[in-house]
Length: 238
Image (cartoon, rainbow, N blue to C red; front, side, top):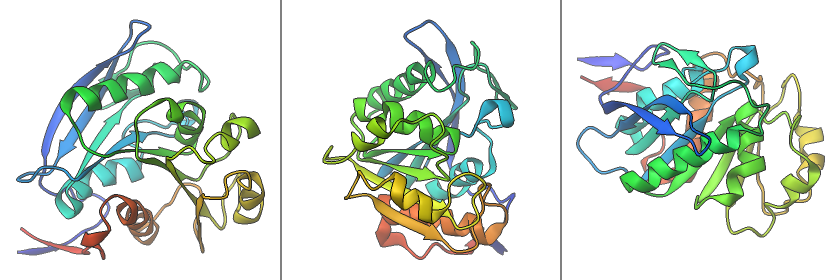
Protein backbone atom coordinates (compact mmCIF):
# COMPACT_ATOMS: atom_id res chain seq x y z
CA UNK A 1 0.00 0.00 0.00
CA UNK A 2 1.26 3.49 -0.86
CA UNK A 3 0.78 6.19 1.76
CA UNK A 4 1.16 9.95 1.50
CA UNK A 5 3.84 11.31 3.80
CA UNK A 6 2.19 13.89 6.04
CA UNK A 7 2.73 15.50 9.43
CA UNK A 8 2.19 12.46 11.63
CA UNK A 9 3.84 9.91 9.32
CA UNK A 10 6.56 7.85 10.98
CA UNK A 11 8.57 5.76 8.54
CA UNK A 12 10.53 2.63 9.48
CA UNK A 13 13.74 3.09 11.46
CA UNK A 14 15.70 1.56 14.31
CA UNK A 15 14.72 3.79 17.23
CA UNK A 16 16.44 3.72 20.59
CA UNK A 17 15.79 5.70 23.75
CA UNK A 18 19.15 7.03 24.91
CA UNK A 19 20.66 9.02 27.75
CA UNK A 20 23.42 11.60 27.59
CA UNK A 21 25.69 12.42 30.52
CA UNK A 22 27.09 15.92 30.87
CA UNK A 23 30.41 17.00 32.32
CA UNK A 24 28.56 18.89 35.06
CA UNK A 25 26.78 15.75 36.22
CA UNK A 26 23.37 15.80 34.53
CA UNK A 27 21.51 13.06 32.68
CA UNK A 28 19.65 14.14 29.55
CA UNK A 29 17.04 12.05 27.75
CA UNK A 30 16.83 11.56 24.00
CA UNK A 31 16.33 9.26 21.04
CA UNK A 32 18.55 7.92 18.29
CA UNK A 33 16.87 6.99 15.00
CA UNK A 34 18.89 4.96 12.49
CA UNK A 35 18.14 3.62 9.02
CA UNK A 36 16.32 0.32 9.36
CA UNK A 37 18.55 -1.82 7.14
CA UNK A 38 21.56 0.30 6.14
CA UNK A 39 24.43 2.12 7.75
CA UNK A 40 23.86 5.87 7.99
CA UNK A 41 25.78 8.07 5.58
CA UNK A 42 25.57 11.12 7.86
CA UNK A 43 24.25 12.18 11.27
CA UNK A 44 22.01 14.99 12.47
CA UNK A 45 22.51 16.23 16.02
CA UNK A 46 19.27 18.16 16.52
CA UNK A 47 19.21 21.17 18.86
CA UNK A 48 15.69 22.27 19.68
CA UNK A 49 13.97 25.67 20.07
CA UNK A 50 13.71 27.76 23.23
CA UNK A 51 12.68 25.67 26.26
CA UNK A 52 10.96 28.60 27.96
CA UNK A 53 8.73 29.00 24.88
CA UNK A 54 7.79 25.33 24.61
CA UNK A 55 10.74 24.03 22.60
CA UNK A 56 11.75 20.39 23.14
CA UNK A 57 13.10 17.39 21.25
CA UNK A 58 9.66 16.80 19.70
CA UNK A 59 9.38 20.28 18.19
CA UNK A 60 7.81 19.39 14.90
CA UNK A 61 10.61 19.88 12.36
CA UNK A 62 13.03 17.83 14.48
CA UNK A 63 10.43 15.14 15.16
CA UNK A 64 9.66 14.89 11.45
CA UNK A 65 13.35 14.72 10.57
CA UNK A 66 13.67 11.73 12.90
CA UNK A 67 10.45 10.21 11.57
CA UNK A 68 11.41 10.46 7.90
CA UNK A 69 15.09 10.93 7.15
CA UNK A 70 16.47 7.57 8.35
CA UNK A 71 14.18 5.90 5.80
CA UNK A 72 14.25 8.50 3.02
CA UNK A 73 17.90 9.56 3.17
CA UNK A 74 19.90 7.03 5.24
CA UNK A 75 20.57 9.72 7.83
CA UNK A 76 20.88 9.07 11.57
CA UNK A 77 19.01 11.55 13.77
CA UNK A 78 19.98 12.18 17.39
CA UNK A 79 17.45 14.26 19.33
CA UNK A 80 17.52 15.12 23.01
CA UNK A 81 15.98 17.46 25.56
CA UNK A 82 18.24 20.23 26.77
CA UNK A 83 18.68 20.46 30.54
CA UNK A 84 15.45 20.98 32.45
CA UNK A 85 13.23 20.14 29.47
CA UNK A 86 10.37 17.62 29.46
CA UNK A 87 8.84 15.70 26.55
CA UNK A 88 7.00 12.38 26.25
CA UNK A 89 10.45 10.73 26.30
CA UNK A 90 11.02 12.11 29.81
CA UNK A 91 12.71 14.98 31.60
CA UNK A 92 16.35 15.99 31.35
CA UNK A 93 17.92 16.95 34.66
CA UNK A 94 18.98 20.49 35.49
CA UNK A 95 17.52 23.85 34.60
CA UNK A 96 17.57 26.23 31.66
CA UNK A 97 21.06 27.60 31.10
CA UNK A 98 20.33 30.56 28.77
CA UNK A 99 22.47 29.06 26.00
CA UNK A 100 25.57 28.96 28.20
CA UNK A 101 25.23 25.82 30.29
CA UNK A 102 23.80 24.07 27.22
CA UNK A 103 27.38 23.89 25.93
CA UNK A 104 27.70 20.85 28.20
CA UNK A 105 24.57 19.30 26.68
CA UNK A 106 26.01 19.68 23.19
CA UNK A 107 29.33 18.23 24.32
CA UNK A 108 27.55 15.21 25.80
CA UNK A 109 25.72 14.66 22.52
CA UNK A 110 28.97 14.84 20.57
CA UNK A 111 30.58 12.37 22.98
CA UNK A 112 27.68 10.02 22.24
CA UNK A 113 28.19 10.46 18.49
CA UNK A 114 31.87 9.59 18.88
CA UNK A 115 31.19 6.60 21.14
CA UNK A 116 28.70 5.17 18.65
CA UNK A 117 30.89 5.91 15.65
CA UNK A 118 28.12 7.85 13.92
CA UNK A 119 29.42 9.27 10.63
CA UNK A 120 29.67 12.81 9.27
CA UNK A 121 27.90 14.69 12.06
CA UNK A 122 26.05 17.93 11.35
CA UNK A 123 24.45 20.19 13.93
CA UNK A 124 20.91 21.18 12.99
CA UNK A 125 19.74 23.95 15.28
CA UNK A 126 16.34 25.58 15.24
CA UNK A 127 15.81 29.03 16.81
CA UNK A 128 17.39 28.76 20.30
CA UNK A 129 19.21 25.67 19.03
CA UNK A 130 21.03 27.89 16.52
CA UNK A 131 22.36 30.00 19.38
CA UNK A 132 23.86 26.95 21.06
CA UNK A 133 25.23 25.86 17.68
CA UNK A 134 26.89 29.18 16.85
CA UNK A 135 28.30 29.69 20.35
CA UNK A 136 29.70 26.22 20.94
CA UNK A 137 29.65 24.18 17.75
CA UNK A 138 33.14 25.06 16.55
CA UNK A 139 34.62 23.17 19.50
CA UNK A 140 33.47 19.86 18.03
CA UNK A 141 34.44 17.64 15.07
CA UNK A 142 31.44 18.36 12.85
CA UNK A 143 31.14 18.62 9.10
CA UNK A 144 29.01 21.71 9.47
CA UNK A 145 25.91 23.29 10.91
CA UNK A 146 22.48 24.17 9.58
CA UNK A 147 20.69 27.08 11.21
CA UNK A 148 16.90 27.09 10.97
CA UNK A 149 15.33 30.48 11.81
CA UNK A 150 18.34 31.88 13.70
CA UNK A 151 17.25 34.83 15.91
CA UNK A 152 20.82 35.85 16.84
CA UNK A 153 19.60 37.00 20.24
CA UNK A 154 22.29 35.31 22.32
CA UNK A 155 25.06 35.07 19.73
CA UNK A 156 27.67 37.83 19.54
CA UNK A 157 29.10 39.19 16.28
CA UNK A 158 32.43 37.70 17.29
CA UNK A 159 30.90 34.25 17.72
CA UNK A 160 29.35 34.46 14.26
CA UNK A 161 32.58 35.71 12.66
CA UNK A 162 34.55 32.83 14.17
CA UNK A 163 32.91 30.47 11.67
CA UNK A 164 34.64 32.22 8.75
CA UNK A 165 37.48 30.08 7.47
CA UNK A 166 36.85 27.46 10.16
CA UNK A 167 36.71 24.60 7.67
CA UNK A 168 33.19 23.82 8.88
CA UNK A 169 30.25 24.50 6.59
CA UNK A 170 27.60 26.90 7.80
CA UNK A 171 24.12 27.04 6.27
CA UNK A 172 21.53 29.64 7.30
CA UNK A 173 17.92 28.91 6.34
CA UNK A 174 16.04 32.19 6.80
CA UNK A 175 12.25 32.47 6.53
CA UNK A 176 11.01 35.44 4.51
CA UNK A 177 8.41 36.22 7.18
CA UNK A 178 10.44 35.37 10.28
CA UNK A 179 9.36 36.94 13.59
CA UNK A 180 12.93 37.80 14.61
CA UNK A 181 15.43 37.86 11.71
CA UNK A 182 14.39 38.25 8.07
CA UNK A 183 16.63 37.72 5.03
CA UNK A 184 17.73 41.34 4.51
CA UNK A 185 18.95 41.81 8.07
CA UNK A 186 20.27 38.26 8.19
CA UNK A 187 22.58 38.94 5.23
CA UNK A 188 24.03 41.87 7.14
CA UNK A 189 24.40 39.95 10.41
CA UNK A 190 26.16 37.05 8.66
CA UNK A 191 28.32 39.22 6.37
CA UNK A 192 31.38 38.29 8.45
CA UNK A 193 31.10 34.70 7.16
CA UNK A 194 31.64 35.06 3.40
CA UNK A 195 31.49 31.31 2.79
CA UNK A 196 28.06 31.04 4.46
CA UNK A 197 25.46 29.11 2.44
CA UNK A 198 22.50 31.49 2.62
CA UNK A 199 18.98 30.18 1.91
CA UNK A 200 16.06 32.62 1.94
CA UNK A 201 12.73 30.75 1.95
CA UNK A 202 9.91 32.62 0.25
CA UNK A 203 6.79 32.57 2.39
CA UNK A 204 8.65 30.86 5.23
CA UNK A 205 7.83 31.57 8.87
CA UNK A 206 9.77 31.07 12.08
CA UNK A 207 7.87 27.94 13.08
CA UNK A 208 7.84 26.35 9.59
CA UNK A 209 4.19 25.31 9.98
CA UNK A 210 2.61 23.18 7.26
CA UNK A 211 3.74 20.30 5.09
CA UNK A 212 5.18 22.46 2.32
CA UNK A 213 7.46 24.34 4.73
CA UNK A 214 8.44 21.09 6.42
CA UNK A 215 9.28 19.54 3.05
CA UNK A 216 11.40 22.56 2.11
CA UNK A 217 13.37 22.50 5.37
CA UNK A 218 14.01 18.75 5.19
CA UNK A 219 15.09 19.14 1.58
CA UNK A 220 17.61 21.83 2.53
CA UNK A 221 19.02 19.52 5.21
CA UNK A 222 19.30 16.50 2.91
CA UNK A 223 20.83 18.67 0.17
CA UNK A 224 23.86 19.03 2.45
CA UNK A 225 24.00 15.59 4.09
CA UNK A 226 23.03 13.23 1.24
CA UNK A 227 22.08 15.15 -1.90
CA UNK A 228 22.09 12.09 -4.14
CA UNK A 229 18.71 10.95 -2.79
CA UNK A 230 16.87 14.15 -3.75
CA UNK A 231 14.12 14.91 -4.46
CA UNK A 232 12.60 13.53 -1.30
CA UNK A 233 9.58 11.35 -2.09
CA UNK A 234 6.17 12.45 -0.91
CA UNK A 235 4.80 8.90 -0.69
CA UNK A 236 6.00 5.64 0.86
CA UNK A 237 5.25 2.06 -0.15
CA UNK A 238 4.46 0.14 3.02
